[in-house]
Image 1 (cartoon, rainbow over the protein chains, first blue to last red):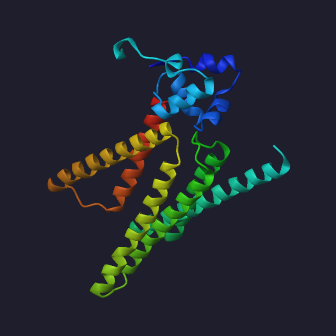
Image 2: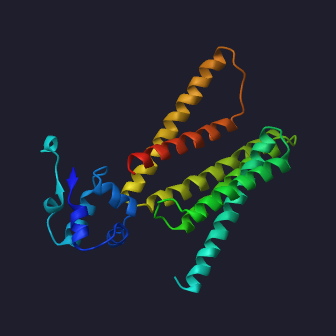
Image 3: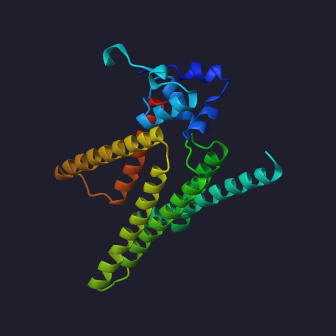
Length: 67
Length: 188
């Protein structure tokens, strides 16, 4: 799954550590989500959507074979 | 960071080094006794090795978010487990009666239980991805140990000598570490 997390984070000028703290996860987790190595759980995805004031679909895009 | 915060970090670092040194010393004591090596040499080597690991952890903490207090608790539980195992080995060599030997054999169970509970607490306090990393590392550790022990048993049937059961713990630690490194690399 691809994510726009890095773009959304950059728009707000937040570091990975700041975002991690806001979401209550580790910086490593944010990095893994941004690089597409880890897909977050639904509760974490909702938390992100709430934080960025958008929907989950605005942050995450499923891969072609996942559609 | 103010002076008070810096002092608190320094105190935490020293505590980490001391705790890992004590755990390393307990590990050295158990293995020194189990493999009939010099006890002092075992304790000293273990303590130095533990202190080195503690120093490394305190200077460059692993990218884990659980509080260092939980790490200290795990070290404490590991020390208790190692000392209980040492107590078991020592008591069994003291010509105890059969019922006393059974009681002595229950000692390591207590130690293991405390250690497993403290590790469980630590894993529960992690975030979802770190929990996955730990779970996968434990699965790899378990699978590796099962293959190692099962494989060695086959070689033993074929005539290879018996080994100390303490090697199972060592094998488990090595496979867990390998699993941890592998999963950390995967989600880097």
